[in-house]
Length: 106
Image (cartoon, rainbow, N blue to C red; front, side):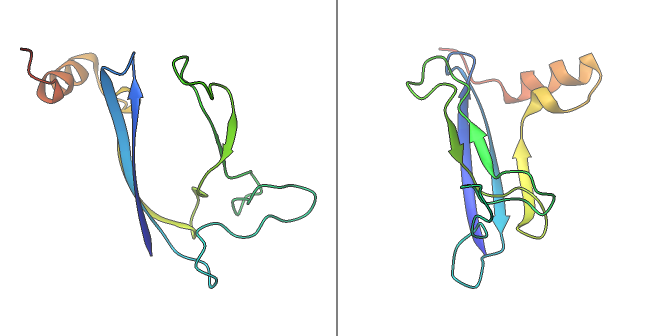
């Protein structure tokens, strides 16, 4: 098993989201299976590429597509992710969650 933690800046780097994920390693010690066919990227079991595109106007690599760990079972074993904007909650629940997680102002 390999455990990877990622944290990404959002909203001009004032808000962070992230995840802790566990991956089953291949027999050669790699997370992703070897790329197959004419494609240069590893692929998920459903055939989609294991890539991520940088989406940050402040990053010099904005809009560049990079190889990423595959995100489907059986490669990805579990995913503990925090991204409150993506949680389907009622508006009041979302506001309460943001208040709970908001950093202290100085």
